[in-house]
Image 1 (cartoon, rainbow, N blue to C red):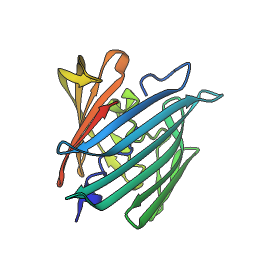
Image 2: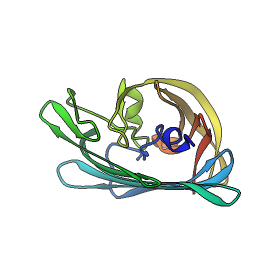
Image 3: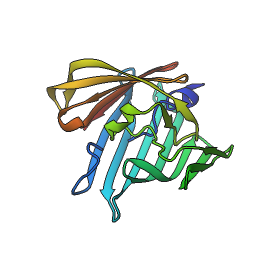
Length: 212
């Protein structure tokens, strides 16, 4: 099955906070489904450090079953260090059944150096991942996928306001679409640009993130 190659390339990241400056740790806990069937969870925790730095820890656990038999298991963990809305350090580990991929990266002067299955260097002083928690990604032309190390061109458009269901209540939200050559993502933000929901259509089905 190609599910493990296509269903998660839109994420990651994961991928996984509402404002550039926060006073305490924030968290986002999502139930994740494919075509209406639960497949797991994705959790994000953002905390402050000294020197205007923030630490994001995210973890996704998916188990896709057919007739109650598990045929694909996915486990992704990422630690990201941010400063002034720019990625400074990345460590990510992804397990897809028996295959493990590790991606590491660090900002060095004017380049972000990546160590992954194919090492690369991004000549940019401010790199951002698909950091859905930070609405400043909506201003970017390129975003880094922490699962693969790919730096992808992204076309981001506003689709206006819509009603979305959040924790059993209908709320008004701003709808955006992130379009890359590899995947398309719909994302919704509420009051104070708080991340509320995510959806993506893949070759294997529709993925939905719903806040717990």
